[in-house]
Length: 317
Picture 1 (cartoon, rainbow, N blue to C red):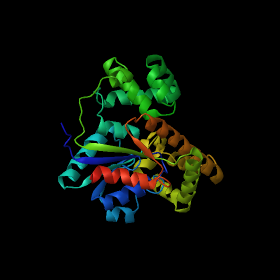
Picture 2 (picture 1 turned 90 degrees about the vertical axis):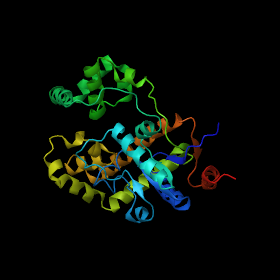
Picture 3 (picture 1 turned 135 degrees about the vertical axis):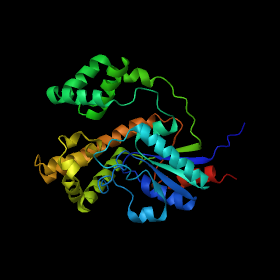
Picture 4 (picture 1 turned 120 degrees about the vertical axis):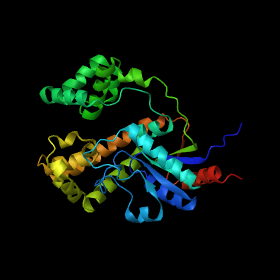
């Protein structure tokens, strides 16, 4: 039986691969609207350093899931999936094409495949874990997680406070590891038929060069002034551990924050920012290789093929 669901495009790729410009162009050409699938772009005030679509790009094409939280507020993958699904359904109802564009693998997974059921966040448990981290350090709690759930500990970096906290929270609330919960398959069917495209330069060297150029351009565009404005916000200025917040841990922002704290000079900021962005791209590419039903293309030399794939999907002969 033919799949009669409406169409959507999932435009995936590592950071600095050119997804934003491509999403805007395709939205203009195919009567589409862009749904951001990016865990940094959901935060207000994270503009230059997060490469948020410019006012010009947003003026011509409706964008969704940008600026939905303040940088001190939490926002889970489950919340994203709910909000993004509502945006997709509204776009389809308007007779337009949803273009899901971004590089946050967990967000794509939550939206397209659904999340396994597991205990909801519990404020008392989280407060207790944060207090323990203050006494013992997040590295010590990561070691504790490794003894309970080696699989999760191998995925989570020892400095990733948010994910360590969540894994321990799930264990303490349910007596089951987060890895065990994730093996349960959710009952979920995305309401659209999706063309998955991965845009990435053919070589890591090309991507690294683009990352370095873009980070330099961000610095020239006033990235440090943007971070100074964030630091001046009363809610962040008064926060006891701003670097534990997901927004401030975003690539580039953490390094800029530490530079403004006086921990290292401007040259070191640039080196650390570029290195952190490269590490992010490496993690994204590892995830993308697991998307076995995705088609890959070079956004520069392979642009004609990408355009053809979209045209054939949206306007079949």
